[in-house]
Structure formats: structure tokens, C-alpha cells
Image (cartoon, rainbow, N blue to C red; front, side):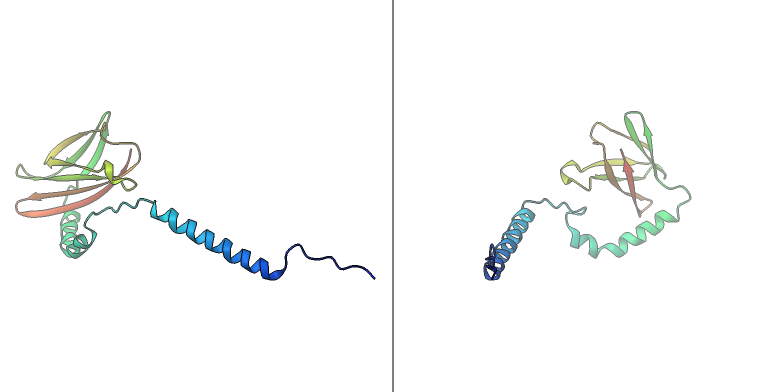
Length: 146
């Protein structure tokens, strides 16, 4: 008769080791997610959601314009071309989706608005243009990769 080989580890210990391994994995996952930074595009996300209907009306006004704002890369400058009369004023918010520390805002008027690219790191940027002309507010969201 042959002698039966004893298993290296019995099934009871294998279950215990599996539970301990699973627990260690979950703890590592939870601890790792606490260190992860999450930057939202909007700092006050819920307030922005509440005024979404008025934002949609501003976007529709922009869509109905004959000449729309656009961006032109000119050497070391990014120019924001904003149509409108002489009483046109607004802001351009440059948002970096992967790091909110690089976000900045510049005032814009009608015509050509040069922005130095020394502030703009290479990568993807979202530009929120909001301006007012003759009592009407307009809004456009542009994306640009530098």
C-alpha cells in the first residue's frame, strides 16, 4: 500500500489565509484612495447645478450669434477673440482638469485679448468665457490643448 501524501496546507487554513489576504487588499485599497486628490471643475458644484437653466439660455444666446468667440495661438500668446461692441466686458476662466492649483482668470473685452502662455502649462485646458453686451449675458466653453 502506498502512503498518502499529506497536503502542504489543509483547506481550513487555506480559507483563513484567503480571508486575511482579501482583508489586506481591501485595507490597502481604502488607505490608497484617501491619499488620492480629486479636483472638480467647479468649486461650488451644487450652486452651479442650480443655475444651470440660466447657463443654458446664455449658451443659446451665444449659439445664435453671427460671429462667435474663438481662440488663436500666436507665438507666445493665446488670443481670445471676443465679438461685440465697445461696452462688452467679461472674464475668461482657464481651468486645468487635472490640477485646480493652475486655474486662473483674466478679464476680457471685445476684440483681441492676448494671454501670455507663460502661465499656461502644456496639457488640456477648459476655458469658460462669460461676457456681457448690452445687458445680455453670454457664455461659451472652449477646450484647448497646449
